[in-house]
Image 1 (cartoon, rainbow, N blue to C red):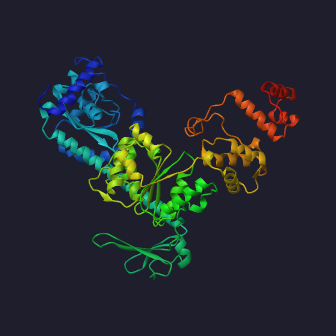
Image 2 (cartoon, rainbow, N blue to C red):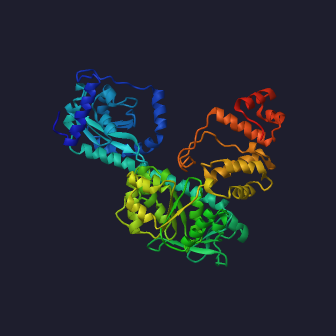
Image 3 (cartoon, one colour):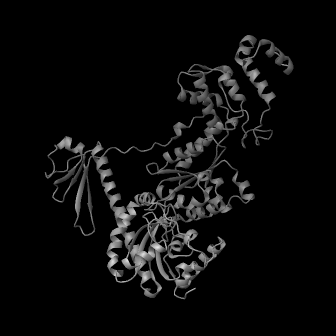
Length: 589
């Protein structure tokens, strides 16, 4: 191969030759050129009309630079098919003979090692000189090619200039690179212009449909723009008239650094709705255990120490967290909740600390602030903290300890002032012993620890059920048997499960009396925190026989052992029901 190319180009060409040999090609083979039909070429050019619209003027402006020599400049799409070509007359016939014309494909699979094929594969400018071409047929050529990308960074084509090796000059590769850059800049500017026009139309549409009167004023307070809502108030002939700011309007000045552009916008502000967080009055409980926890939480709200809430799923940890925030000195600042178990491990740092523009593929153009910065001066609620990976825990520890964050992709740190409330359904000391949770982070989060009791250990299930049901359907109420049945359930899902079952029961009872048969839950749930002989362990999966026994007893309790009514509800015959009673040894108490 020739010594004309640089080392990195040599490597690209060498690898291309290896691929050609791997496909069974030989340098002495005849070039297997393929041409599309005229209709196929027109269809391809139609698909690439945006690229061609900008390429043709660029190619035409370049033509005087090489019209004295035998050159051809071509444009390919991203699949390697030539969609446009400009050639000197003396080179045209030769170009046709080697299939360098619109409709011909110049990928490696078709034409062996060549500049267009290599640059589309490697996405880098390349020079393929003389014997660098795989096929001997093309050894008389010197070809330079450069890729073209759109505004999103996607490969959309390539530019190639070819000549005889006798007419090759060292300016060929810089020339084709400049041509590709010029074309790419035109595409970027055009794309930005179209985006700008779209944005203007979009903003104009929003502005005119906006119910708030909007005005734009110049530096002499004259109206130069008004939306329809403003025109209805001050008249359609308002443009050019002086406007004095009235009560209820806000003036925002917009200018550039040189102060050469100066505009003001007068807006009638609308009240900003603020999300309402829970307060302690929303936490119901007459059980001494929950009452005691609530009293401790009220005291904790007045402190600035970190807080750790422990308890099984569904016990109301976020309800307590929001109530503590609402009762604290930070109540008028943000409350930001993060479900730590729902964040992918590779996105934890960008989610918590934010990121700068271009920090990673898919990042927003302007970057993004993280949850710590969003909660500045307020409360950050880290739910399911026990499910965080050790890598994420290490990053979190520094932020909690130093009160400093560094956005992903940035070298600048930021001070943050947040109160941390963490929550977990896991027993963190056990997680520490099993090396799943950092001990230093645990003690940073455990300034104050509150443990919320599971529903099965509360003595106020009936009162709580009545309270929740009143919020679901004020007309529905629980029968005595239904209340008794609620007390017998183990409640692996705690208050969340109770609320769900009551919602379903109110629907089934159609706003009337809720009986045991209306209380439906999955009998085959498996939950970590359901009761067992020692107060912990798995919620037992019931056999079909156990389920049948329980269903029969519930139905008999509901019908007060009216066999006919019970058989009707169970959709079995009276004889079948009597047989089942004998089989299971059931007798009316």
